[in-house]
Length: 402
Image (cartoon, rainbow, N blue to C red; front, side):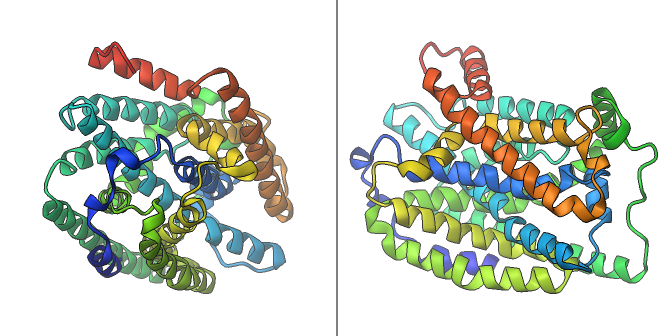
């Protein structure tokens, strides 16, 4: 991954190509990509929620497919695994670059009061972790954003060194952990044991909160592990934005990203993922972020020079405009359908029906978001979580205007 990013960085155009006064107020590709990333992360998380054992059960049931439904599950999971997490991470970096540009335009210092935004995002993530989903990413993004906000204020050379250095550290960690997992598999440790009692299937809402709190160190390992990768992707997202990846003139850059992401990384990711389930770390955190670059470039190419998202794109854009609210809501709705504190459907479905059941839950939750987001935005400018976040920021930062 570090070598690919290094080659790509060498080809990225001078950030000065973007003329600040010529940019539109809002690029449709940004909202569409946020919406795609949100629904894409659900494509991974829904398999966790529909497992009767929750996240621990999902990790325990990572054996190879034995029938047609098993192969269907493997393919569907591999298509989503890590790609949209990487895309969401890139979009957060792009969002930081946009906020920095806005601050510079307004004559405000950067990062200025951004740490307040990061602190509120961390609080949102903590509440989401405790109350909704133990696989929350917002806490990690808050810490990463606080660091990258200061890095964006450094020179171009310094940012490039931080990007490549963080990518190199990530690759080294990924290699070491991959070797450790291979040795652990050879020792036949048996993996996580079934939960007894099972708070996902038979516990109350409060039982799950206490369970997440008790196992917080275990559940928060992923954000710590991916911290270097997140730093690299945040910086890369900001760099691509400054290089004009969404501008009509950025076609050459987009083509290179398409070749790297969809022409090279995507087939390799699918081949590795389907051939050996033990390579999930390599694909989720190695090849998948490169595929995310291809997805970003594909949307950027489609919307380059266009001022509207279109009929289908509008549905993604509405979800993208209230990404925080929809990210939390999709996990909350799916949990209410599947966990014991809600309808408890996950424990009632037979193992043979789990794949169509999971696909059905995904489609249902997606439909709910596709209806809820535009209805909400007809009356309000922001999603409910975005409104609370913005209001809290204005109080903490003592701002009188948006």
